[in-house]
Length: 419
Image (cartoon, rainbow, N blue to C red; front, side, top):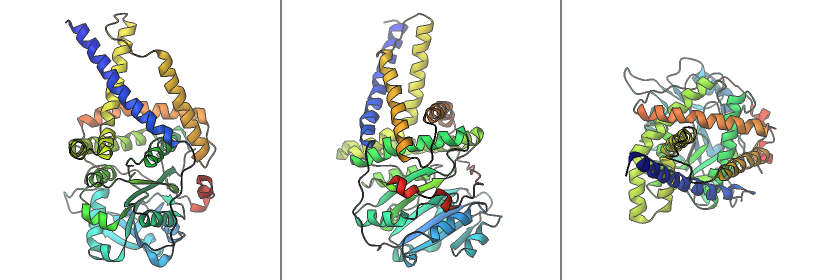
């Protein structure tokens, strides 16, 4: 067997391997169509601690604290806490003035910096009061806004037995430019094709770093030991290893400020990619072992998600090899499926993205332009995943700057649109 035959067999094997992933996600995504089913409703009962990690966020923190102070939930049943993390601006002052509990955190020389460490410090300050006074803890970023029904929905989930819940991830500024649109359109698509779809068929979801709520008992059982650059993903997998999958709430939304600069977007996504690889190497083997030991499909699904960056790199590499073979007329490697199938796949993605934007987006967005920006967004992830694989041990934290101080009343009618 010569090298051409070996390469041909290898590339065909890779294509079948990648095809498994494609069919897996395709079948799951079909369950994202249609109207979500509501949770059984309960009167307000659960007590919540709302934690906001903020580093020099004076431009946006006031709008969020005011927003959280006016949620449609009895005020005596929740507390707003702002973690002023190494701030040298007016973040703490503004938060106190608006009635939030403020915990100021400053780092010693050489101490690791970042959101996971800020949260750890705040949790330590609450001590035993965490378990005594609160049934659930919700986490937000300083640039967020959240629909006023958030705590009512979280109360319903906790009362119905869910222990880790992620709400709908939306964007403050989807129509600023093509970069912010690429983020927003990607989130609309993933919220349905992945989060809602998986929730409907009983698979685990993933928390997205903000707008999520965790049962206090579960939080204390697991402990806050996540130290990766994607502490949300790490905590998701830690819970999954305990048999507790994350759940999805389609009816409450958190609005996040998306970068407007492509460079800032790459910096942010490189941090996410490094964190993803870090969590992948730490937890994939544990999830696969749990899959074999307990025949646990939830753990298998979690492992598949963790190796997704590797799948994307292999997909790009396989495509490059096939195209080289075609253009050099060597035919030592070729696609195992006809081009019509790939056109059908692209058409399906376009229809799905169009559907999610029409059904779930508050603002009227150009569907064709959204599809193009998602394509650019996803293609640019390929070099980021390659570079992050080579540098995943770099855990330096580069916070994203936020400047859009949007009031919640500017996002009116979102809840009714989502319903």
